[in-house]
Structures are given as structure tokens and as C-alpha cells.
Length: 157
Image 1 (cartoon, helix red, strand yellow):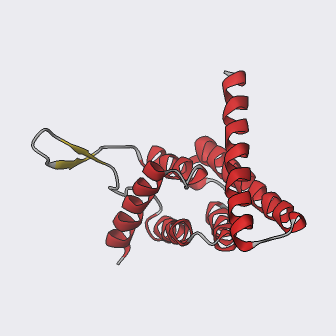
Image 2 (cartoon, rainbow, N blue to C red; image 1 turned 90 degrees about the vertical axis):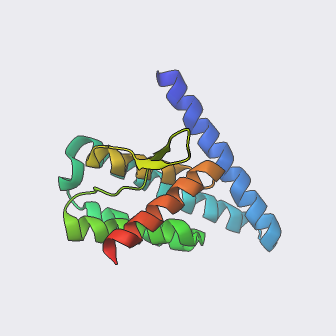
């Protein structure tokens, strides 16, 4: 189990480096600026991991959960990821407004193409979204994050 976790962390680090070097190459940034961006992204991932751990232990009643999500949003702004930025804002607004996370963003499809919402516990729902955000650049994760964005907007507005 520990070995698997280390491998997952290593894969995440490689993905982060790849993303930053691609971004830097496109922007013709210096190696110092690349390193600074790596440090910022690592801080954001560390914060996200801490938030996930907090929610796993204490659920929605975790101390400073809204503030932590706002801080993560600031990191997303710096990374210039409008989807993650918006979803984080909608998430903390929803949590503040509803004191829970009963968002119907996940659906199953039957053989005839009909979609049905998946019944999921609120805490697990939030944890699922937060874990999607850990690898927000992945194509499938991005689609699911978009589903959360749409569902949150419908619920809030």
C-alpha cells in the first residue's frame, strides 16, 4: 500500500513537471521562473491533500474548510485554470449556503441512453470532487469537473 502511494506521488510530480515545462517553453520563461511555478503548484497540491484529509476525518464540519477552499481557489487563479477556479468558488458557496454537499453531478446511463443520478453520500461526493481536482488536467477528470460546475450552478442560481 505504501509503495503504491509513493508511486502515485511520483507520477503526480512527473505530471506537474511536464505541465510546467510545457507552459514555460510556450511562454519562454527562465529556469528560475519555472522553479518558482513548480514550488507554487507543489504548495497547492499539498494544500489540496490537507483539505482532503480534513474532510475524510471531520466531514463538512472540518475547521476552516471554506477558508481552505478559498485559498485553493487563489492557487487555481495563479495557475490560470478558470474551470478549477470556478468549481472551487461554487463549491465553497454551496457549502456555505447548504451546510452539505448534496450535488447531483454524477450520472449513470442505461442501455437506452437514459441518464440517472448516482446516489452518493454527501461527504463522499465532496471527496470525489476534491480528488478529481488533484489531477484536473486529465481529460476524463476535466469532463467530470465540468459536470460538477454545471450541477453547482443549477443548484445555486
